[in-house]
Image (tube, rainbow, N blue to C red; front, side, top):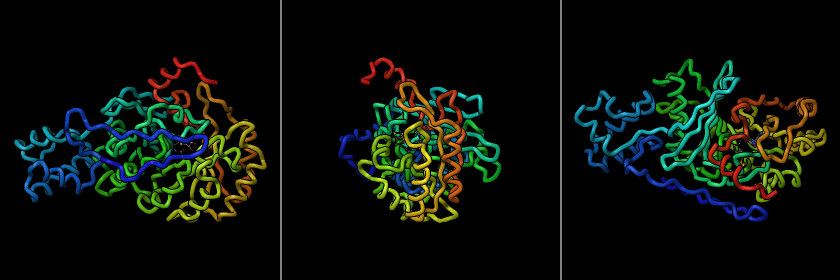
Length: 393
Ligand code: SAH
Ligand code: SF4
């Protein structure tokens, strides 16, 4: 599927940003059905030779098998005539990303190393809690944006993930958790955050198409209130994200001055803090019941003073933002040039924001022992490649 949104070049010190590659077609020539809108499945069946009425009926049945039952094999589709099932299998595929490795942290967090059909590695993480289970989904292999504190930003190859590969992560998690057929109650997988590898708003069309299926009541049936999209601040795409996807918004703010944000989130040189906060104020659907989350990574002696906390409060008030702040202790990775703020400093920062009436919880790092925490995702193959190249610093 081709994207209808071009990537924007970012002038300044980070220009040119490498443009993410598109996926190549499957080597076996089969048409992947996962990730296609219902209507498109019908059109594919018709194009392959089914009568219009047949195509419509079969599309409805196959959709149900894919998203309600989690079936990947046409031979299991008992309401399709036995003789017709091989006809489908010769032309179409219902796939999952390939699992290369699955790891479990001492705190129960799970991480999967996955592979695309054309051989690129990416990762997904499941974080179980007492009352919910959150799947952290990737939108790209790597990321073009190079935030200074993020391991994913150091990956060299960046390819956009296809809708099949984005929805496929959620389906794979359901496979692993034994959550087929889809049921509205008692699920372990209750929430989705687009906070894995990649910048979701630089792969807008595919993320939108995938999340539409995840939210479809006859699809994976997760409410948009339980889905959060995190962006480092791709301002021109934020209004469209609100209108066309309509999920909760998280914004990776991380700094309150131009100087510091320019350094740690280089995209700030293109879209500054004021522009970003204006886009937040205009985000469709943001209100007191549905607040925007501002993510703030705590970096020692960089962005963590009392004055920074007070400025954060001033900014949120100036733009009248229905906001909550998520303080993320920095998760280290080999070669990172930052350290995490001391716990006392994080607490003091949190108190200042909290006393201004803004919720400011400190996020407990999860899965650090298997490199599954925020900003630690980088595939093993890439880690090895990096280790061989002498560092420029
Ligand atoms: N690209 C998107 C979403 C993925 S990152 C974005 O940047 O928002 C999810 C969150 O983890 C972001 O807030 C990101 O800034 C944060 N993060 C990245 N590296 C981190 C690290 N080493 N420690 C803690 N948080 C990190
Ligand atoms: Fe990309 Fe987000 Fe990491 Fe920045 S923090 S490099 S935008 S994944």
